[in-house]
Image (cartoon, rainbow, N blue to C red; front, side, top):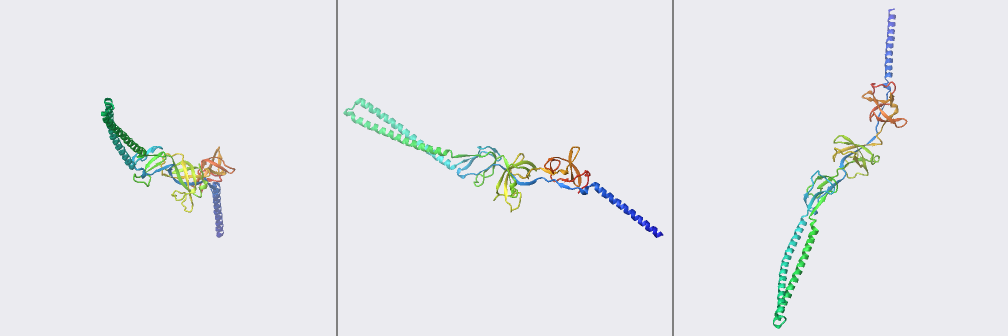
Length: 386
């Protein structure tokens, strides 16, 4: 009898324990259903595909100026390193010592001829004076004696002297004329080379001067002029070149300042970069050709030539879109739930219709956000999720 009671007690205990276990399981199941977390599905917000262009900031126009030994040695330098110049400003001037020597030689010739001319002119004046005296004597003698036999010999002698003096004056005039011709020739030579003794070299472009060379170096640039306007020279590999086009917008990260500025594509080359430095190429694969891409910046403030950049160009537009099923509306406000560190967080959004199934997000979400794809009335802020 006692054994019978014990069996009954054991059976009752098993029934009680089973009932309690069933209730606990059912309660946990109901809580799970109420939580709804086991049914939450997420979708990750994706932005447009991005194309990256790596490059450096360069002057739009850069002029290398080399020295020319044939022009001579530098005489004066009119600019300083870092100076801003305008097109046409004098940079420096040459002095050609060979021309200087020729000028000195021709000047000496002219001086010598002028001295000779001065001596000849003095002789001519003396000869003309002698001639005048002889003519006066001859005239007086003729007036005094006429042409009688006694005076004829003296008159003839004076006439011969007058003729000789006239010949001397004529000869001196001829010599002076010859010297004048020589002076004229030497002066003509001087005129032809005088302007070549000094030669001014002017700036072909406006910009900033960099004095990078030596006055004795004729193989490397002496001065480089960089225009103030700058652009970016970068590269992209063949996988993306056809997706880029002129005026396409870009977000340009300036590595040195960690600032992003707006820009756009100015030019896309259709020729592969050959024998060029392609260290800035967007792909390091040696099996892919790289193409040069030129970009211009909306602002050049605090940007220096030589800065490295990374430009982000969007393949298509920069829209963020999600399924309209992810959006809930309450009291005229639209919102979604996103997963923030395993907790559901409510985010207000604004949007506009994109197509029958999707909307374009105007504000509230960013690329990479994990949005609840199937929100329901049981989806609550603060719920745990995976």
